[in-house]
Image 1: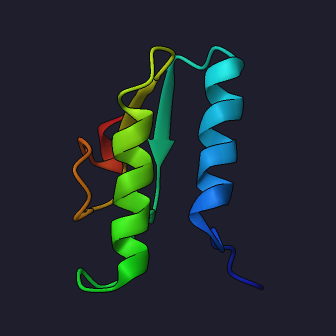
Image 2: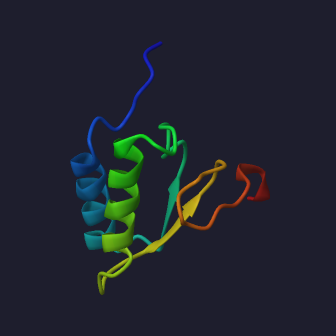
Length: 79
């Protein structure tokens, strides 16, 4: 089986936009930060999330896996 990944922060922008426009009540993220802390791509993802969290139509974001990003996290087993 092939693993899937977000190849660019632009894709994350599209996904967040579509889910917000579709009136999602929450957005759960899994494995969102697969880069080391000093990798520039990690900073790009954090920037996308920071900008998204300032938009008027933002939806609550939660990571279901451990993350270094500044978003709330919750255990996948808490459901």
